[in-house]
Image (tube, rainbow, N blue to C red; front, side):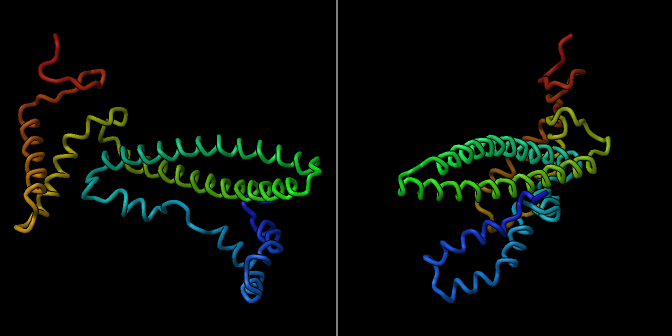
Length: 224
């Protein structure tokens, strides 16, 4: 079975046309790198690694506890699911276009139209390979977020209602931000951090933010 993302044949197929685009020395260099370029295509990074997810996305100052890390994993995974579904529709349209162009190439008698159909078909075949590469890496990241969700979901927080952890989480986040303020911080920056921190502490003290048995947010006293 041919690997979905095998690009070598597409590269070699385009060599003839690159002859018109590249200088002879550049073309020779390109031909000598076909296997290397195929390797590059196969292992290139498209989306984030687990290292990037843990350090750049789930950084401790912004997501200081397991609850906030878990819910950010949910958001990230959701985005990748939506993008994967959109890509699936694009892929289906691309497949339909390939079928249509294949028939046009088989039946077209006008030389100019035939050449354009062939170019469009080659482009769509290349697009198909690109989409398959993107889909594979999107699925890898979806699996990665699933792994991280499982790791952070330690049973200490509500994993059905995102809002329930946020008051405590925001408190820690703005305590972290307050620590970074200096005499050189701008007035708007200080106003924003101090203002939100004071609001959070007031809300926590007043108890105005509550959760009922159905895990829905209520404000003020619960209804009898």
